[in-house]
Length: 158
Image (cartoon, rainbow, N blue to C red):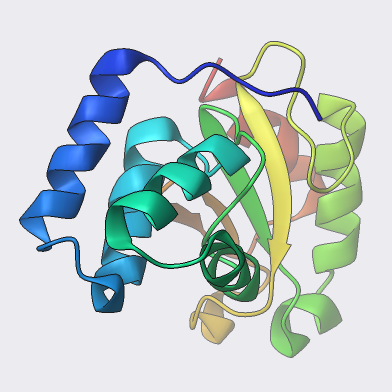
């Protein structure tokens, strides 16, 4: 994987976030949330910067980033799409909904479209089992999604 050059202004902004949390290693998760909000994901360079600022090992930061599914080390699309694969959603056809998103966007789970607009991921439960199958696009929740609804959902974000 190639190294990326972090914009100096964002580096300074992230250092300020670390200072706001007193450069305390115990605030790692809060700092990572802020960093991901800032950069859209957590590449190795961001993890190294956070580790240095909080005086923790890069391995520790990496361990936290890879443990929590909220954090991502790859860029997400402008409109991240998540399909719930929890039991209720799965039983009610979430796999067919996922297949339809993959077909329409021509990407696999974990990938981002070439134009950077959409990325697809799966998750285990959004706590809306009564609306199964559930799809989220960013913060918006779609319930009782059928494969034939997928095209319309995508078109809302074009």
